[in-house]
Length: 473
Image (cartoon, rainbow, N blue to C red; front, side, top):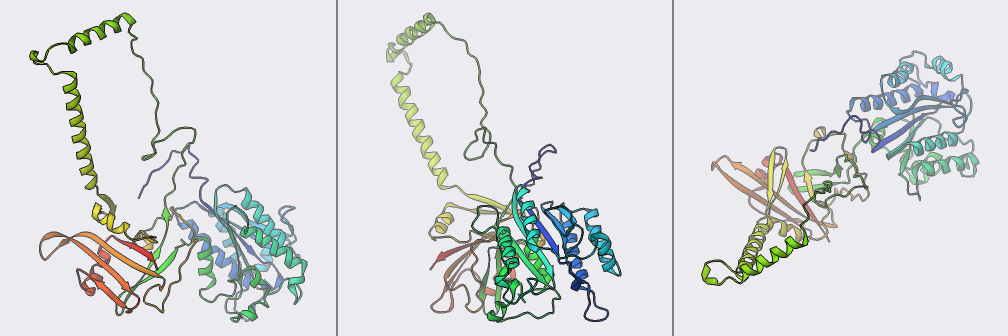
């Protein structure tokens, strides 16, 4: 992996591929109440969820995650645009001071007096104003790759009426959420998530019941039961996103999932004022030099001398101009032939995990026979070895992880594993090439070459890479 570092005076790394997240905590009085003795109020639970994610971000080496925290329904107002809301942590890179601001509130035995001292007490606020403020902050931030607002509350219907869709407050909030998400715009798309507290509260499962809840129209995943609140916050903010999970079955009882990521390192943009080579993107440096300009008389003398040399007869032992041209043409032909032979023997070498994988021309031709390649290279690498400073492309097309069929019914996988390894038994180097072709009609593996399944599974994680080609149905 490229570890190129730029100079201290280069501000490129400071403003590229940033993730901006606002945590908005509902400050209504019900958030400070407890239903059972000994339980923590929902406001403290919200602070704990935010603190855990802030610590996770601070422990990473990346400075791309910017976080801000807002408390709504307060008497104090930070700005005119953020009316009746307190900015607990301004948007920016987290440090010890920002983390302590949340930690100090969380460690208070009675959090309500501490919040009153900080915010001036409770006062009704408009959530749409808070969301519009978040949108303006996002718009002022450069090079945004991901923007998100996470709202933590225990109020199931803050709009004050059963026909909430007729409420002007709901309409304003929905419009603000649409601006955050960025639908229909060319700017960076965002997310708005609602975390309902407590987590073990009522969550409707039927779609008709969900449609009775106003938060469902603002966040369709508000009542999801697939993960807890902490995992959902992590997925929305700092988790690396994969395009899909491909379920691969090698044989009876032998199944593993492959997550497909698109990962690229941050690259310094090219200066468009200069020209670069197409292949290596190196700068084209123009140089100028000076040569002595010969007079016209000297040039005429040189031409006369050349004419005399050309008229010398062949018996003198010197080669004529025509003979020299023929030899030059023959040399050029031999050079072209050698170049074409070398092109046939071109090999692509990739070094991954200290192992060098070499693909020759024949293997390239075999790969190109498969149309519409979906996955080119899938590396079996533990996630803890993935550098978090790399950029991860957000998913655009996600194929379902089909657990019913043995593989995705609309795809035909062709998996080619090619790795030069050391055969301990034979004490020689050998090439191992395996091809798996899934036959949907017979619901079984049609071809399994070179080695049996058990041996292949034992040796699977010793190989650095699997080339996976997916052909459309």
